[in-house]
Amino acid sequence: MYDFAIDASDKPALYRDLLGALDALTAGEPDAVANMANAAALIAQYLPDLNWSGFYRLVEGELVLGPFIGKPACIRIPLGQGVCGTAASTRTTQLVDDVHAFPGHIACDADSASELVVPIVRDDVLIGVIDLDSPKVARFDEEDARGVEALAAMLATRL
Ligand code: SME
Image 1 (cartoon, rainbow, N blue to C red):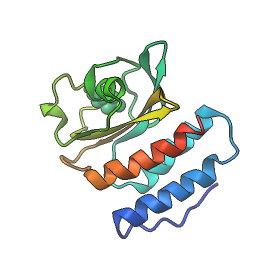
Image 2 (spheres, rainbow, N blue to C red):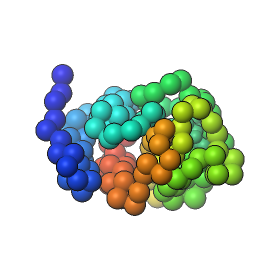
Image 3 (tube, protein in one colour):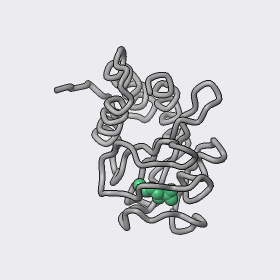
């Protein structure tokens, strides 16, 4: 069992502590599935108002479902499709206040209202994406985007 003292009083402190916890959880562990599984669980435990937290990995040119916390989800997403496929093909963070207004959004969980997807890139190679969904409209802001990008940058070296 792992327990972390996470300061949720403000977002910079929350993401700083999450990054430290993720560092501790994944340091020295070479198994990508184990590290993605613990990262998905850590994020789901400490970020409020999420209904889905997990990974899609780039496998032979398409995104394939990885470790996650949430309802069973779409298994394969072509590059360029949906929020995840857009983040992957453009290699840019997708911050979507209202998923129903996003052209081509793929509805895996009807509860999802807003979404944050961050690409994971190592040495200019796309590894996959972190996907976070919330049942609240506009749940994520720029601080969340920068915070999850920091988590993705660390994970890029550990997957
Ligand atoms: N909504 C995503 C699909 C993945 S689920 O949210 C887990 C998308 O549009 O890419």
